[in-house]
Image (tube, rainbow, N blue to C red; front, side):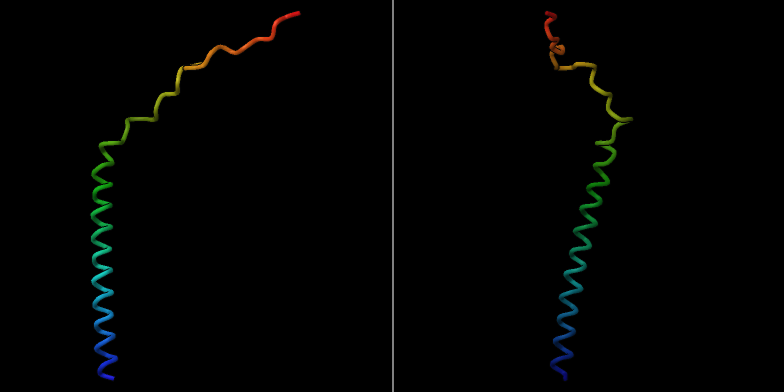
Length: 64
């Protein structure tokens, strides 16, 4: 019974350490994302391209 208790405590300690490390990594990642937000945010949506930008005029069928 004592061995089971010691094993369980060790397992819980390792699990808690893993969760703590994962939470810290996630917090670091989200902090980095938050710091990038103001740098990449635009004032408004991008403007649409001008009509026929980069396209040739439509082809018309010859009149017989």
